[in-house]
Image (cartoon, rainbow, N blue to C red; front, side, top):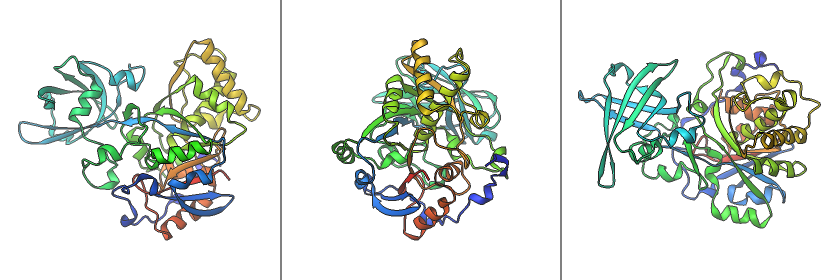
Length: 408
């Protein structure tokens, strides 16, 4: 299906406010799980996920960690200015490097109350134990939808990640329509979160517990991890008539060489992506391998993916195994143990999964790129799935229930 023929109005449904989960369940793995396979729908809970996945399967998780990306400043006039840290400025090799900066850093930010902020620096006092740290925000320039901000602080021992940890607030999704609470610090984070850099949680992973991992282990269901730092663009509404006109957000991701080797070993088994970010990452790996096959001398700097790039490449003759092996050989040649790059890949109806056999994911907003991704996997049955979820009291969005969707 051509993107210009994918009309956003065809991917809508009525989502009553009361169906949006404002808070998570008390026990993570007791959330409901809708299972879609071969056109049929069944219902269970996450704790029983092991019964719906074959032995020797591979679950792929995103181990990014949500940072407290909201910084609140109060001007001398008592006006409130909120800075939402989106991503590092150009010039940093990756988010982790930017997060580890000391004394100052450049960041792209959304600014709440921008009209009240002229050009004067903003000051904020942050408490760390018994010490007070002075954080300064200086407006460098206006960008398209956001601002370039220079943050500086007077404690050279602290990284920017630590500054956010002590002085920021959890960036809950806007559709929850509530302020972050103490419990959100733990619950809006997966139990395996490791590398700081996301401004939104990879929500499919919020349902997993150590007890569930033990059950998966007993059935010899393997797990491995990628790191994709989720940007605020994940909430960006599609405001265009067709998806072809929508600009997809670009996100940093990194994978280890051993992860790609693990994928290769499971190509004849089942590979299940836990969350849309995990799916976009492993599908991106296939296309990076294809690029290398077509451009063997491609540099690290040019090895990324643009939004519609994969739809213009004729890769029918290149198997998943060939693409992943080409990527591994490129990493060996370039003496790279960890691949760090950006992907803007958009997965819409007409896209055929190259690596994943199934997706575990929450229920998404109407007319969103995430709903289009679901439709790419299950076809027109996305509507049957969502109608079932609405009629059977499933909870929607970030803190809601989820689904296991096997590709049609």
